[in-house]
Length: 188
Image 1 (tube, helix red, strand yellow):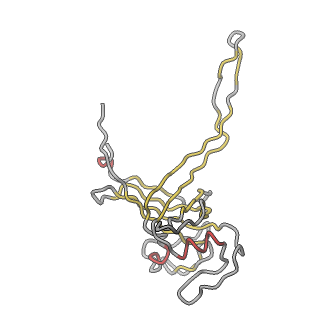
Image 2 (spheres, rainbow, N blue to C red):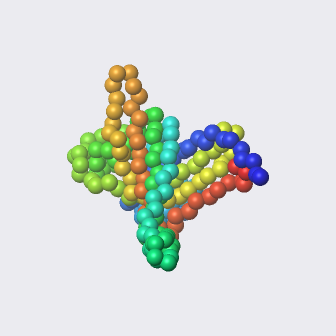
Image 3 (cartoon, rainbow, N blue to C red):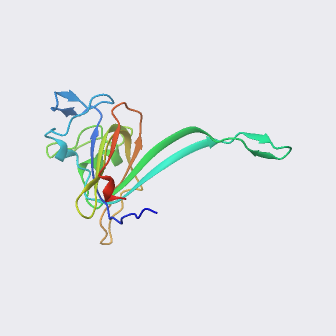
């Protein structure tokens, strides 16, 4: 029997909406098939905030064909029709990205540009970068994913509570989607 190690995981996440400019590895705009690399100078601008909690969910839809054996029906097989991954990240800091996504801003909010028309944009697609570290600061998981993003759960505050935006990301198909699992000895 193999023992497993217990780890607290700290998550970090960045989200760059579709159409935003990048410079590395070459100038371009974020698209399903065009992503910046790790040397991109603007990554820090797209940090979604201090991640307080995270939850990854796998969704699977199946159908179960049956056959008689000899007369009672039994399950013959389970056929997967659809599967998807969803990522929920709750932050305990409030960044412009949360306002853009929640209120539907069609413009990028910056120090110079803070005025926008609410609900001018539908939920956006873009590049989500996730990194998770053990409590010993060892990278154990990393992902670069094409997603649809929105803020769910409202923007709650007041009564001395910290506003904690809940970012929801739904994985979409892209040939550039990748996940990395770190050193096996960390979790085995």
